[in-house]
Length: 451
Ligand SMILES: [Zn+2]
Ligand SMILES: [Zn+2]
Image (cartoon, rainbow, N blue to C red; front, side):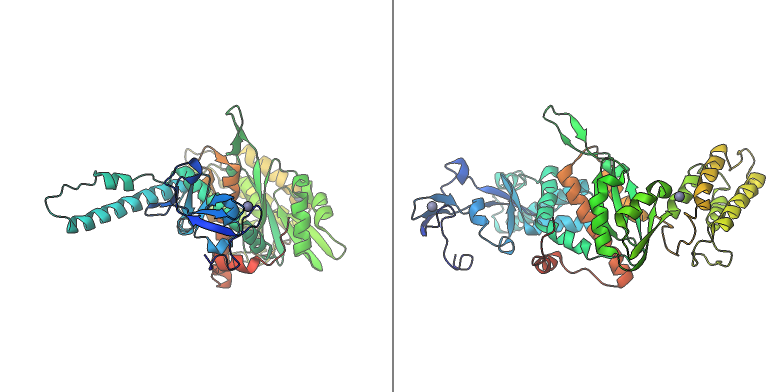
């Protein structure tokens, strides 16, 4: 007790000192019922002492008002309404998800760990009890041990609890990531379509259309937001905060998938007297617009797509990965015409139609308008040439395979997965492995909370 409350425990309501501690009263009332605390291998019962203060107020040791007096680090568990989990349980689950497991796989993992644990207890007990004692895995003590497994719901709550404790840390850590030369803005639609909530009449209501990811030149997410539309007005404060965070004297290139529509607004929202904003079309999206018109099974697909990439190359840039900035608009325009001409002439293969379809030509002519305006020129190497496929695959794995996902869980999962993605890139690029989250939490706790 003195270890946790060095100045003595005072009544949370009227600060009177503690009078006596009585022991748990065997669940005589609802408030005194033991609580289930989940661990990976087993569930334990938490049995709280009952405190009586001089003022005659009485409360159990697990009362939220008492727990609140302790520092986060002092508590080895997190209590929910009726159940709870140890911090070790949360940590294991977060690590498993970072390792690539989905929530359903984590649930199965916990079930397997528990079966293994109970079996090992059984084997140990068999060694010490007399041969004549009848003991099987169906005996009462083992049946009791098997109940209850943490459900999918408990595991989801575990993410939310972790997110609530580390939200500030995650936010500070993301704000520390910068961009040197350019950023890209990318709306992703698939993962947002299942995020929603259950209305009072039990109808599931989806809330968002997309997630906006802002990435730096090495592919780290430096800001993100769930959005109801692709309008920039909805992310106005995200962009102005970002501008304040990133912009220094000179120029910042911003890549988007609809350059000419967003240009003026972006310049207005992010530009300053000392920093000019250049808005370009994301090269990945530009190439995608043409690739999507081509049959994925066409025998010439690979050759044709390799040629398409060369359209945006400087003629002196001959190595596998683009090294020079994309050429001027005249060159790209001519390359694009040559590309269409070449494949129109030789794109027919046995019983396949020409690889260049009417829809390809339509996309090419739409793209040419942006080429002429310089939306695809002067793009430095490494910028927007490929989307981070691994990151999108990870997100789709978690969000694409479930039909419904609540907003708190979605926010928690996105935050946790984005942090992991950023750490992986940092490890690869800066050769710097991430510090344990609890240490970072300690370091971040003195930083001012940003709303
Ligand atoms: Zn009191
Ligand atoms: Zn444009």
